[in-house]
Image (cartoon, rainbow, N blue to C red; front, side):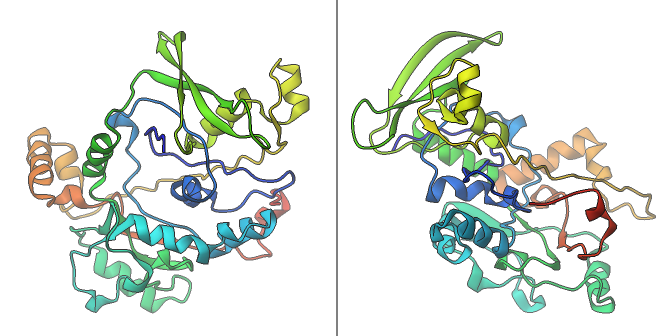
Length: 331
């Protein structure tokens, strides 16, 4: 297999024309190349590009099953993908599960991707859990990665993300920086359309100064993000023939949905003052203390930096009669 590592991002899955935008496609990102993705992209792997809050979330089983139903491919269904999900995961918990904060049966324990609960907590954690007991509006969810994410539960994090990137670097032998995939090249012979090579170029001051081609021994994995993936596919002639022809790109596979149905995940941050000094401000505003905590994480994998940006995560569903659907259509 020819594989090239790149910054983690959401993958835009290939879909038949007319596919409605799934609600939680971002959660499919880490799985898209496991089942059906067959292409790759070269890009620089830089530390500043892998800051994603370390939150580990798979999304809803309903969304995976929706993709399976629309494509007619059961390989995309939640149940069929769980084999791969568990295979790549290495779950470890820093706490005893007497608090019922996760479900061991939905996790894997022998994979490469280290997943856990936050090792450090906050002073309001207990209040958060009590609120789920007191209000039916915010129910407690033992494990939101079970495929049924509605409710609030303890955040699961990729606290070994840096160590994971080091492992990837060793296993691949090299990570190419300042190179970018330009297009995928079809095999010169064989049944149907089959891509077996990648053309990439060296980028200097934003311009391509040289081009090279590498041929895959088995398969190519494309994981270039929600914008980069269709960009590479379209330049490779995979897309809507009417659009490609106007750009002077020869069509290799007519697939009108490429580059369409883009959805984004909005984010709103709410901040307020508290009468407690046990917050992240105590080290994010203190360079000396931050350096100490960073060393603690590097050598012991402990300390405040093992915590994600949040200790709890919740999924809520808008009611069918919500007024927001008067102005926004889905599907």
